[in-house]
Amino acid sequence: MEASQPTPRAGDPCAIVIFGASGDLTKRKLIPALYNLTSYALLPDKFSIIGVARQEWSDEAFRDQLGKDLATLGTQPVDQKVWNYFRRRMSFCSGDFADDKTYDCLKGSLEASEKDFGTGGNVLFYFSIQPDLFALVARKLAEHGLTKQENGHWRRVIIEKPFGHDLPSARELNRQLTSVLEENQIYRIDHYLGKETAQNLLVFRLGNAVFEPIWNRRYIDHVQLTVAESLGVENRGAFYERAGAFRDVMQNHMFMLLALMAMEPPTSLQGEAVRNEKVKLLDAIRKPSEEQVLRATVRGQYGPGVIDGKPVPGYRQEPNVDPRSLTETYAAVKIMIDNWRWAGVPFYLRTGKRLAKRTTKIVVRFKTPPLALFGGAESDPIAPNYLVFHIQPDEGITFQVRAKVPGPTIATKAVHMDFDYSQFGGEVPTTGYEKLLYDCMVGDATLFHRTDMVEAAWTAAQPILDAWAEHPPDDFPNYAAGEWGPAAADALMARDNHRWWYAQK
Ligand code: BG6
Image 1 (cartoon, rainbow, N blue to C red):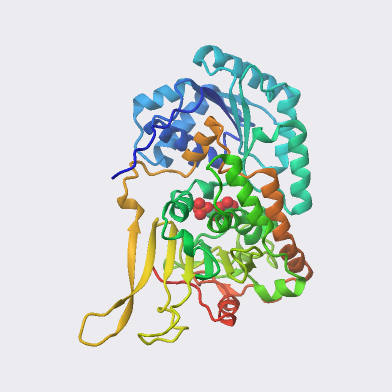
Image 2 (image 1 turned 90 degrees about the horizontal axis):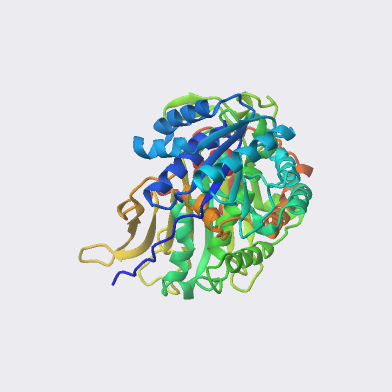
């Protein structure tokens, strides 16, 4: 019997203020996502969108530009009636983020939006801006009385990563933010957690009684998490030079996927209950010594190569990149979790740019049966069961089991049981931001990073960053664009008698 789903309510009436409204994220993700929310009837009727940026746009120019962008970058055809409804509710404040006049303009727009569109006093501020401006904008909003929550109205701030550059800077940013905002006003967004299959991880683990009893060191041999991209650094060379693959993707997105995979079941799905378990898991990541880091991690940087049949430059030849750059575009890390459930089970994480293809997967490799009754050595890669979560681009789940090959002899082969998300109804292709924006509008912070989670993730990352800084790489570039990363990453697995999961499915 199908379980009935409660009909979710639309978000609270609110004004959505986007700082950095002329930037890429606004046109590629935020406006398309807000538009898509109308398809699910989850956007409140009483809403407005106020853009803030240095760009000298009038309200009309802002509306026209984002209308054009939506037509080309949205995930579904634009219904003019719906768009006109949006347009009317959009306005723009032009100004510098350090200038008090910008906030006076914003105050005026918020008052107009309350009057014209009944948004009440609720305001969602989205910081789609450079991280070094987060603290400034938060402070200015507070000084202008715009973050005050009174008369039952909320004021919430969504912040995009990076949440600091290392543990001390993350702590400092948290200190600055929490000096002007309450913890319950800060929504640190992680777009990976908005992905359908990422959200499905907990449902799969905890909604199916057959998996729960085997989700531990007794039955699981190891886990692999891969976030592979075929794109290079594009026009983000200057940013990436300071970040690198570990800070850009592993320390945040991948640690959060790891938390979803490995955390203890929460006592409820309430935000704090889930986040408490995530913090505990992050705290349990072993802090390796320098020597252990050098043995259990691999850094890489791509040289020139071929992607999709076309030659592409190496990282050091990308715009705004130092021709002798030592920034890693690939990272592989073996992580141990020192808790009762996972003692002794390695988690291998890898991410990189300009790899052979774009794919994000979590692979759980189970232990082999106690006796090799049907032949096949224990190390035979097809012998064990694998459970693969395909996070993107082809969302789904594969369970690899062993089955008998038809015929008179007992020969066995790995076969796949596949679940394909695309056959599962999703009416509208999403940007990944819909759920997160909606959650913020209803005050559900479950999928957002809490201050202590950010600090726990940096605490786990810091020994790796420190050891890497002490020992700069001397072999860059060490993989060609279009390959699967440096040979050392295969060697890391081979030392433990494992290999990366490369299969298509
Ligand atoms: C971002 C990183 O957080 O995630 C980018 O800054 C990366 O470098 C991106 O490309 C990957 O996201 P997705 O959703 O395309 O896998």
